[in-house]
Amino acid sequence: MLTIRPEKLPLKPGDCVLDLGCGEGRHTLGLYFSAPLGELSGQLSLIGIDISAIDLATANKRKTDFPLPESQRAGIQFVRGDGLKLPLPDASVDHLICSEVLEHIPDYHAMLREINRVLKPGGTLCVSVPRAWPERICWWLEPRYHQVAGGHIRIFNRASLKRDLRSHGIQLFFEHGAHALHAPYWWLKCLFWDRGDRFWPVQVYHRFLVWDLFRAPWLTRSLDKLLNPLLGKSIVIYGVKGPGAQ
Image: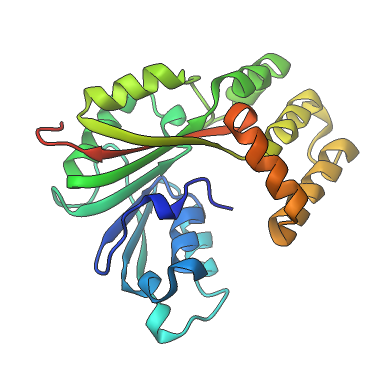
C-alpha cells in the first residue's frame, strides 16, 4: 500500500531513491516490486533508512517474498540510521521519500535541513503527513493515541507545512490526499481503544481494508479516489530542491 504516487517522481536508470523513516520498507519495497516500472525498477538504487532495527529486519525479510527476474532486481539496502544525521554524503540522493515521519520528530526543521543536505540540486522530495482534521478527531476520541512512545507529537496544518518546505528551498509542484478509506479505521481504533484491535468493529473494518488492498475492486478504488481530496488520511506533497536550498 503506497501513499506516494511513483509516477510523480521523474525516475531514470541509475537514480538513487532514499526512503527516510522507511519502517518495514513499505515504499522501498513498493518501488522494488513495482510492476508498472518494468525494467526501470531494476535500474534504481533503493535505500531505506530507519531507527528501528526490528522494522529493518522485517523489511529485509520481505524483500525475498517474491522472486524477481534478474533484470528487475534493483540495488536495495536497508540501513539503520538517524534522520537527523544521515549516513550519506552531501548531494547523493536523486529522490527522497519521507512518508508519515515528520509528525514524530521534535525538531522537524533539523530533519528538513538534513534532507536538503543529502538531496541533489533538482532532486525530488515527497513528504506525507496525516491530514489535520481526521488526526484531530483521533486525538479528541482518545488522548492516548498520541501519547504512546514514538507516537505523533504534532498535527500539521497543510498551509504551514507547505510554507516550511518552501522556507527550506523546496519548490512545490503537486499534492494529493491518500487513504480516505483508512480514516474511519483509525477513528474506530481510538473510539474502542480499551477494547483493542480484536474488538469486532475494528476487526471487521481491518478485514475490509485488507480485502480492498488485495482485490482493489473498481467500486472502492473509485470511492477512495473521490474522497481523497477531503477525507484522505494523509496529505502528500511533492517538490524539487531549488538552487541555494538549505
